[in-house]
Length: 579
Image (cartoon, rainbow, N blue to C red):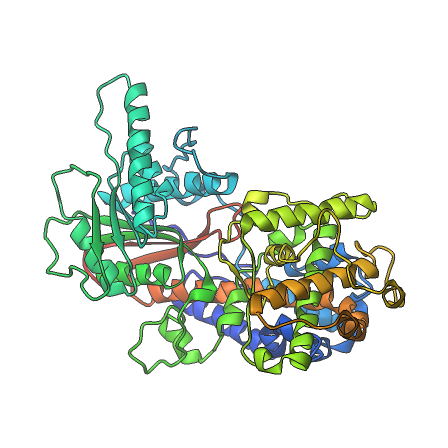
């Protein structure tokens, strides 16, 4: 297989060699170190710790007067000539250290690759984002498999089998689909049989279609993944049948590898947390695994160990150089790595203002906890959400109420299905994701089609100092939303209630500083792509450290506006030997 260049450099930056990758990572680590307070900031403490004061006062004074549209462009590296030179340098330097994310076609990587358009039957159940991902990733996996002579693809973290089925039916590749959920395996099997009948019916010649073999296993280590992969892929004379195997971490069926195991490609679409990293280790250690195509996600779920002299196998860091650097991220900073400059700049003004309001509500609620429920505050509680359907219903009520007063005609989801893809029922205490912040809003309780104002004295609400006229809700409604936000949060935490007058006193004390929230969180979001770049370069460097027998590259496979986690780690061996 030819070796395409690994360089994705911006200007002087390149990751074509291990030395260049190390230098890039060192530059990022040095930059992040200079802005540690901004990195480590928690939204819940914004008012309590006066976090806006941790940023250069000239920056905040400048940005507080900027239009929202310009704030949303900060993560994309956009600056204005009249801004302080130090602010411009911060934004431009951060952007210069980020991996370029503009999508490239698989043909630019492997000229003989082809992107098959997924038909209606195969695409059933996929939204636009998923269909885009499956079409381009399956094309890349097929091209890599053919180039290195691999016979079987192992889809790690296969979910409902979308990638596995595309590879099986569109590219006629034998596939083993590994997932921790037996329900996912059942869905994959049922769906695959239905698709098989469709393909068989439209095929003029008598052709044997095979379905992915499913394996149910909760993979917690690279050893388990290696054992399950080799066991599932033993040569069965080409007859891949639907079969579900079960294993546990304590008994991973790890006998001696069968010599009939074919040459393999490991593939993964947004394999969560450490699973993507375990794929890298299995690629490096198993001689049967000839190639790897992996798109990771959920950096906040990575395990982390910053000490190079331990025997642990953390999800971060993984390269020797990164372990030696002693850069510690932590969950909150790794969560920041999921920020997307493309998603920020594509937010509408109204949606952005709503996000900033939610940040303000959560931070003000923390002040309520600190004052009236200090024992609860010390536990760093998460505030629950009531489920996707209820969140959508309540957001619609917000839209209807806002439209009634002619304020926010554009306050709507650009893609409701993708806005609610996260099915976790607890709200992080650090909702830095602009979409995540929107989901927080729907936790607010409403009565009928209007905001509940029972028990609120209009005489003291009217004393609120109304801010700029372009704010999407007037301050009376904002306090009402804050009051309902606290009611919902108290219901989740089970800790009584606070009189409206006391809530109003806290809201009034922080109201003036809410104008700093937008600038502060957009500045912090500008560091997110930088953190993700460091994590991705760490994975690339791990592969480069394996020596000249491995070729590895980072490749922007998806449209980042549609799929922000769009960077694929692609690697293959130049020999058949284990590393």
